[in-house]
Structure formats: C-alpha cells, structure tokens
Length: 368
Ligand code: GLU
Figure (spheres, protein in one colour):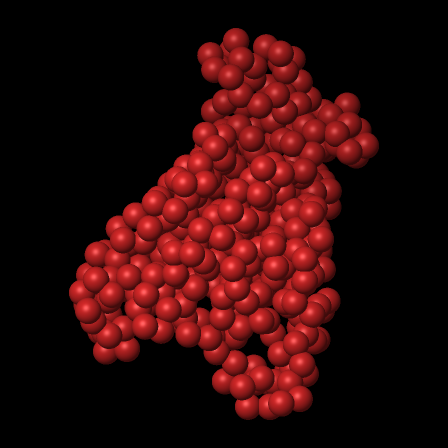
C-alpha cells in the first residue's frame, strides 16, 4: 500500500541482513529479497539498492574481527569485500533475471553539484538499459573527515539525487520506537511520523541501535534529508524473508511522511540558490506565458547575460530588466546565444544535435 504510488524506490540493506552473527551469508534471505525487487520492477517501478556488507564480507574472507579494524585496514578489507558483495548479488539476482551494476560513491560526489548531476544521469541511463544499480560508499578512498561512514545517510542522498519517491531502510529493528524496546517493555512502535521535527521531541533515541554502523540517529538524519526532498521514508525490519512483501502486507514499520511534494522541494532548492550564474532577458509574450504556467522557449529570449552551463541556476529578467523568476537552464549560455529568438523546432538544426525543446522547463522555474 505504502509503495503503490512510488515510482523510484531506493532500498538500503544493512550488513546484518547479508551476514549473520556467525558470519554466515544469508543467501536464502537475499533470494527472497531479489524476488521482491523483481516484483517491484515488474510493476514498472525503478529500484536502486544501497547495500552495506563490503567490510563484513571482507572480514569473513580474511577471518578478521570488524571491531578491531583501524580505518586504513578497513579500507583494504572493504576493497576485498566489495568484490565478494557484488559477486553475491550477481549470483542471486541473475537467477531472478535481474541485471545489476555497481556504483561506488563518496561524500564529495553527493555534495558537489556537477558530480551529483553526473551521478543522476548515470542512474537514469542504467534504468533505460534495465540494469539495477547497487550503491555502496567508496570505502577504499573515503577518509574519516569526508566519509559518510553509514549507508543510511548515503542512501538518503542517493534518494535525493535521483528524485526518488521512497527510501526504505531495511535494518534489524522493526522501526522507530517511543523508547528503547530492548530495555523498556512498554516501548511502542511508531507507525507514522507526520511532522519529524515535532514528533521526534517525544522520543528517546538513545541506545536505539542496530548492528550496522548507523544507529537510530543516522536513520533520523536520513529522514530529515528525505523530508526536505519530498521523499517518503520507511524504517523496517529486513530480517524476515520477503521483507518488501512484509512491508506491503503488514505495514509493521515506521513511515516518515514528507511534508512537501517533490516539485515543491525542487522549487525550494531552485529559489534558495545564493549565486545564480547568469541571466536571461525575455520579451513580454514569454513573460505572459511563464505567468500562465508555461515553459520558457528560445523564441522569447532577447539577451543572455553571463556564462553558465546546462543545469546552472539563472535569473529570468523581464524587458524592464526586473528579475521576476529563478530557474535552472536546460542549455548553456553559449547554446542559448545561438538559438535565442528561434522557433523550438529549429534548435536541432542550429546546434547540430538533439536537445530539449524548452530553454527552461516550467518545473525548473519559480516566480518571485
Ligand atoms: N560501507 C560499509 C560496508 O559496505 C557499510 C556502512 C554501513 O554499515 O552503513 O561495509
């Protein structure tokens, strides 16, 4: 039910789901999970998996104890374990006829805009090729200062970058409780959080940890990131077989409802840019069209000011030089200089390649 309206779903799986306490790989579980993912994909949903387990599988192979590892050693172990992890996914998912690919990300990749746009494009191309992206932090080069260190927050940033509708954090706890259920018998599972900032004040998250690197705190941090990007989030116990089916049928989990829509989140982000890279001066006709909710076409552009790239923040000025909208440009300033004043169906001929027909899409524009 919760997943019905989600088109892009990011699912994070913690190490403890893949490797049990006795260091045994949980292949039966992974097979049941792969079947669930196959079902989502058959309903035309785009799925991204964020999987931990490189260090756990590296430790298993080398017979090391995770607790005693220093950072430099754990990086080498992650490098050994990441291959094991992907081999495991490949073995199990190919049986369900799901092709997989690997994406390793560092904190800098998600924080720097150009790199994150690039990552977004790669995700989209993988969807087009019908490959399922499996993401992990690039533990081998992430140093302690520039490290996520937990895949909860990494997964929420992946959800944000890919414009996902839902992030599912599969962990070894049922969800968020009013207090630590291991200590307090009267602890209650919170099924729905509608207002994260307010609701969280009544919860004692101390000691609410699972076996992975992130406890409840990193999950709440992840929920905050999702909340700002218009993405819903679920914390659920993934230890059961068919964990996604369990969520759909039983809803025994915590659901964080995002207060804003994805479009609102995008517009908020556009308007909050501190330094737009350039300006487009447009004619009255184009201004009228924008005011009635239409996109900005090349025909209505009179002048390009500044130098900017595709995807950069820009200001839209009316013919009195007054800024009336903020936007993300679908073309670079060099391209707009060539196509301004032209009809949209001439763009391909002028530029010599296929491109978008509108210079700024209506969803990428906010009136001031
Ligand atoms: N990236 C780490 C790994 O693959 C896991 C981080 C986490 O447990 O959240 O082992």
